[in-house]
Image 1 (cartoon, rainbow, N blue to C red):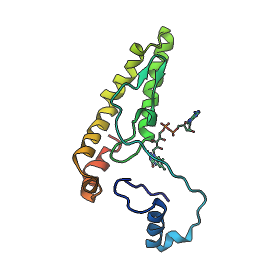
Image 2: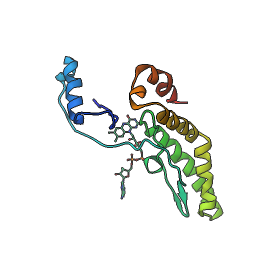
Image 3: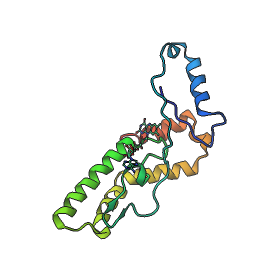
Image 4: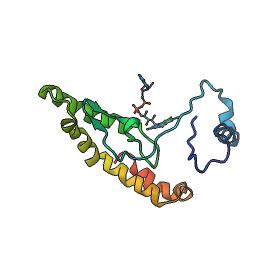
Length: 147
Ligand SMILES: Cc1cc2nc3c(=O)[nH]c(=O)nc-3n(C[C@H](O)[C@H](O)[C@H](O)COP(=O)(O)OP(=O)(O)OC[C@H]3O[C@@H](n4cnc5c(N)ncnc54)[C@H](O)[C@@H]3O)c2cc1C
């Protein structure tokens, strides 16, 4: 069981939302907790470089999670593959300069990164309350997954 919150909309402690959600569905109360995991997801897009000399940032470190959904696993895996492909080329050429590694940044930004930019613009254009409506989620958040 997991619950995600938009920090700027939440007025109660996170655990209280979880408690209320479980209380709403009696069958959920039949389970028992095995672990409590909490954390933040960086839901923006990187404005600066995600590469440097001998450095490629991937996943949360590169702010690659979907700004609308907070989903970051698939993007991190995808970016990891792009970075690995460029890393292989870098090893063959014995060149791990920022100039060369920018190829990874270019591939990310021209591919999935572009959709994340779009989702970030949507996030900025619509208020947090508007983004939480079922119609918005149907139109944008769901369609953002897997495309
Ligand atoms: C509570 C929660 C729920 C989430 N749910 C979903 C979900 O349902 N679907 C989804 O797609 N995304 C979800 N996300 C987002 C997703 O987990 C992240 O976007 C994704 O895991 C990012 O992958 P990553 O490899 O960049 O970072 P991480 O998966 O965080 O991996 C970073 C790793 O580096 C290690 N590390 C940190 N510092 C050091 C150090 N100094 N030395 C060595 N190792 C270090 C950490 O221990 C960790 O293992 C969720 C996030 C949170 C917090």
